Image 1: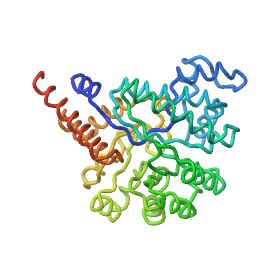
Image 2: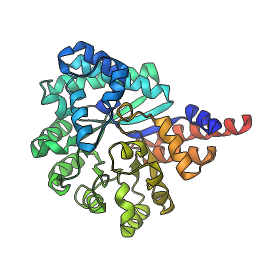
Image 3: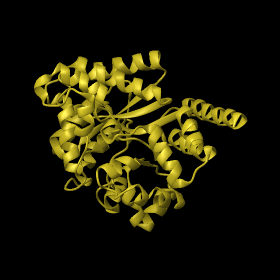
Image 4: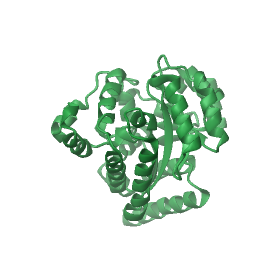
Length: 342
């Protein structure tokens, strides 16, 4: 795998399922924690690695929210956003759709206008200085219920910044039925946003069906339980509805027992369009390059197969057609050059 790891390291990529707060590396969290020593979050990057060890999904949410609490003003938000872009650039990520949860910050006292200005300022700077194009998915934190849905929808539809392209639903799936959020997704879709809810990770395929029928999902976040429903697999494959698959995350949150039990091969063999993503990478001790290496092993891919996986993400993205063509050509050129030198 060493040659393939080197190939992955230099491969131009797009990432479609990665969370804003969940991308806060130990380096970034340590800096934020030092700004706010009363938070209880460790300020030492090594101690943070132990802090980011989860017993189950509920524990993960608890730790995640403790990091959210470190974002106390617009400058914290700007710092986090720009540094995430820097980490993406190091992995040759050219384009990322970052899932942002405005409600988590506005409910903690950061005005929506200041929050949006901070992420937009970081986005514009990142594109200019780091050559990383960021776009936003604003998501409803499902555990916070309909008030969070209303506020998220208001911000997205009335104040949506230039970088906003899609609307999602995150947080726990168990006890949070998808259909209740239909009116909010309808409003978001009406102003031109794409529908990309999480579904079918810690619950069964019925949650994916709900996301498709009630929320008009164009892509599904996770969707790993789809393998338990042959009719659903056929539907996803026939309608080319992509799944945003995050292998290490699924193991870390105990949605999948271990990587060997991960259903990614079954999904691909069923003809489903699969993209590989990192979800909350530092919290799960991973990054996008590592997820590509895992997928390459589980799917028995060579360099050409890995490049095809990267093209899947470009194809499934909401990047404009010109941008898709340019990034696809860059991937093809990289593969050709690799073939000549290897």
